[in-house]
Image 1 (cartoon, rainbow, N blue to C red):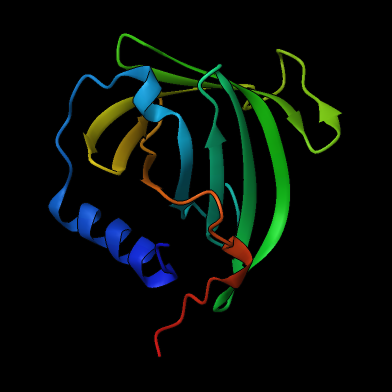
Image 2 (image 1 turned 180 degrees about the vertical axis):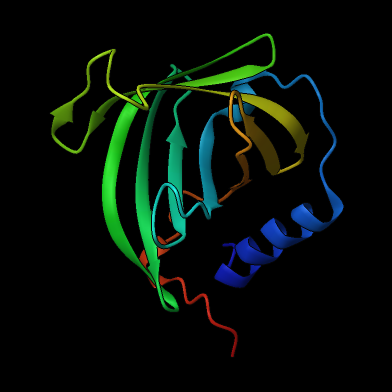
Amino acid sequence: MIGVRGVLAACLLSLAFGVQAGDPNPQKLAGVWYGTHVDSQVAAMPLHWKLWRQPDGRFVIDYYVQAGCYLSYSHRELGRWDLQRGVYRAITERIGDQPLGAIDKGYLQRFEISGQSGERMRLTQKGAATEILLTRIPAEFAMETMNLCPD
């Protein structure tokens, strides 16, 4: 099982050294992924998430907010995903119990896969300067137990 430090170290290493762009197979994107993003325009605190991408094109993502050294559960989103000509699309259909309509902001997000190497993937959101790093993690990885402060 990958430890918290292992996940965070993998994220930091791939940010430092970069990953090589490629033409990913959609089936290789299926699985469980950890991601994090800091954007004060989106949230006052850093966001972290655990993303389950199913091979059938469905996804579930649990979001967490960072408060000090720990994560607190925020909410769950459900939807569909696909990969077309190197563009990864995530279509959010529900946030919690609330279904979304096509005109809701954030319904469709498109990302270019700017790099993929082994268990890491770098995405750049189309139409924005947002870059996201995802790291594959074991399904049983418990986000709630992450301690983000160094010893």
